[in-house]
Image 1 (cartoon, one colour):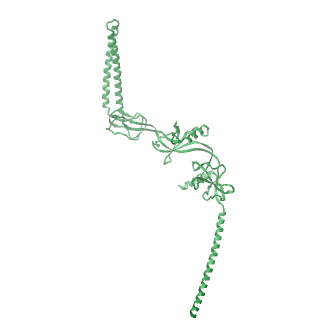
Image 2 (spheres, rainbow, N blue to C red; image 1 turned 60 degrees about the vertical axis):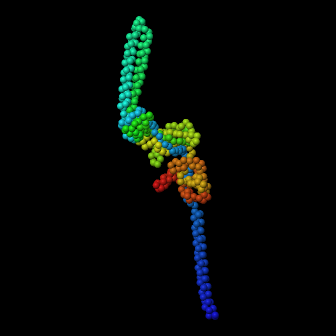
Image 3 (cartoon, rainbow, N blue to C red; image 1 turned 180 degrees about the vertical axis):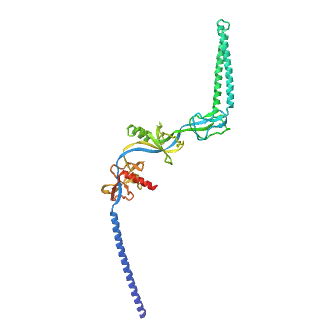
Length: 407
């Protein structure tokens, strides 16, 4: 037993020494970690104390022409449906589908044989009526001196006069039949009623047309100039009229509109023709029509376009770069401002329309407000910042460079 106790005592002493060594190492590590934390906190506090650098723009009122972009549809100036005015068989088609035609150009030819026969028959009836008139005139001429000497009774003279008038009436009727037969013969040659671009043919050679109805054979649309129809809120229309009356919006400026073909960069300028005389009760909008030159026939009927119209002028408009406007957590627009003592603050605003890369601010900003336009994402409300002023042209240039970099 004594020997076993003597063996355990050296082992216990060795274990105690090892525990003391580990404890000392842990204490040193904790001390070093504490020093590191203190150093890191000190560096973080130093970084927080350093104000962030932002770029600000002092907004100034300026004249801004209010405008809107509205959807519109292209409509032809004139549309004519070419129809068969007489019944018959189509002998030929004399145009190229999709080509430009002029008024009076021959488009179709219908078999003229039955109409020629009808004309000849009407001309024969007219000749017969002419002969009857000549005979009645001769009889009346002979009776005129004889009735004076009572060689012919007054009754025979009156009968001769009535016969002449009846023959003349029959002649006029026969003449009308000849004119009708001539018209039908002319209608057998189908001509273009207006100048424009013709679509595809609705009938082919050998088709029977005009039987009990005026068959549509083709359609012609005049495409130069061309109309664009769109609807506009009545409030915008009244604002535009008021601006034109008080002189802030010129007649030419208010009457000019522009369009952009949807999905392309093609643009056209035109003029406002008229607004409808009634307002739609359901939508509160009024129909408007514009006219545009279309010599290259780029605008086609039914095409969807965006119409840019002038509505008026805001003489004291506030414009800020688009990147200065952010959204709050509830989705409303806001801007970051540099207030008193260079402290950041957020302010809710109301946005209007865009002009290039700038937002029109309708409410929330005043002249002289310093809006943060650079470093907006790093600006925190209540935090002091280092301010670098920028001029509006430089901001616009920076916006253009940013847009080019994105492309």
